Length: 215
Image (cartoon, rainbow, N blue to C red; front, side, top):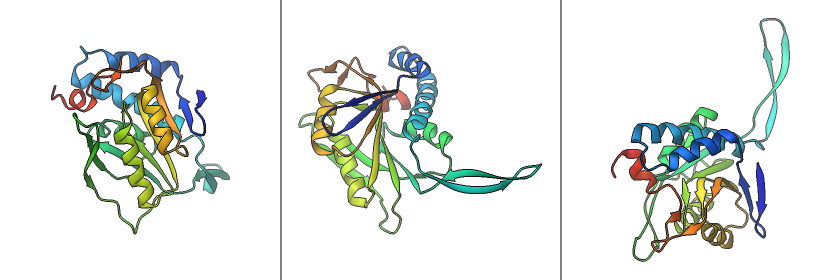
């Protein structure tokens, strides 16, 4: 891993060779939806292990075929919050890493003209508040959607939040830090920047369209 501290916010860059390898193929525009989905799941699993390595644990006693022994189990409730629809492609990888996680959804998109985030769905339940939430958004471009989505999770009442993304632009990181300096980011790669349409380049393209085969 590589840690990049902006001012207050921590950006954790996953440098695992397998992630770099898979991310290279994920970028390739010739990759078909089937392979894109498989790569998304595999990359998400690697990010999940990176993002959860500081989870608190508590003692647990189990009985092996030979004797009783002491072990550990995760202490707390984990929530996954994919940003619909592109973030849905990251859920399976995180579920593979932690099958008992709750899955909540935020429906949010960026208006292509104003770049303002538009919320159209969330079903957060005030009776159920997780101890830690991982917001899943595969590309952090100008940052507006991620900023708004994390804001909703904070309003829900979660204190411990991390943003997990495949790629991020320097502009998106700066904008996100300005709003949420207390939220760490786990990212596969920091790209060159934004194009005229405020899309991350070299980037991944439209992740939702590529994942669901609607390009």
